[in-house]
Amino acid sequence: MISLAMDLAEQQLRDGTASSQLITEFVKRGSTKARIEKELLEKQRDLAAAKADAIKAADRLEELMKEATKAMRRYQGMDEEEEEFDDGY
Image (cartoon, rainbow, N blue to C red; front, side, top):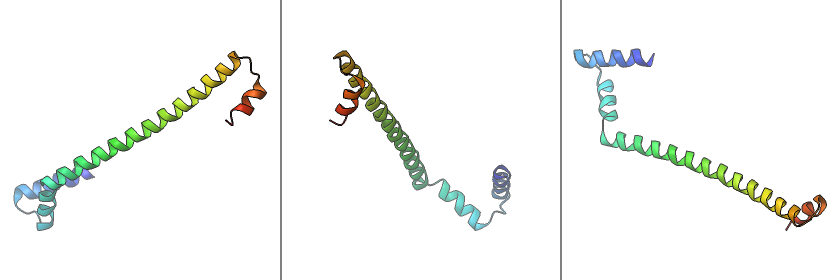
């Protein structure tokens, strides 16, 4: 549907029958401001993805640290009950 609408708009622009609203829309889309806004949105999307990845990595690091701490406690001879009690600091 979008493709058909774009084709029709293109044809109207070529024929000179496009409405002023249609012409204004395409002028806005081609403006420097529109390009900058699009780039900004893309960068915000990338930043949000990077933040999500960082949160996942931090969660994974925390889990690895817990596993390493448990392994060290087992190596020192602590049993399961002492591990659970000591996890609270």
